Length: 200
Image (cartoon, rainbow, N blue to C red):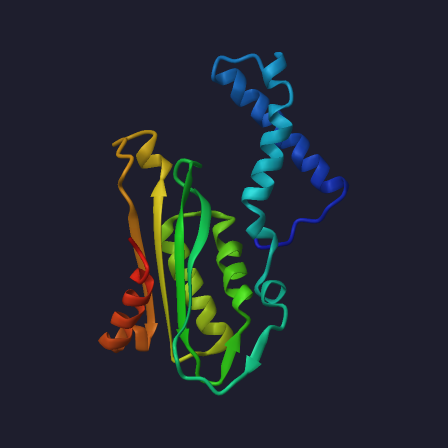
């Protein structure tokens, strides 16, 4: 799954197979996949799924693109309210919300946009929120070897909102604390306070 998908005839064949599967699925649901409103749905759905799972076709070196710099800094770096959209691997329904990522550098810093791209790489895969949170934290730790990393994701899950318990206002919150974010309560507390600052 980690191999980058190549454009060209192989991908066209894969999408053709996917479109065929979607047509069969529509039939199983009792629909006519050839009626006007659904005629192009298999093509659209295949294209959408390719985009929504495009994180499988990316690797860390491509995402970071060399944007790691030597810098004397020992204060917290926080990028908060990163929009997250992913697909729950249990029902293939979306979950969405905000991701907050912080780290305390040791000798290296990472370009701020790369933190967002890191979140994007892992969220554009079939996921569970718990694993997504851990992947972001531990990948950032490996990339810049900071003193610590903190990641919090707050998300709404369609598998809880549209089906099952049908609770529209339930929000799932997950966290991953690494290094000093785990061992120093005052740093963890500062992280939480910064996340909640300027909120109504």
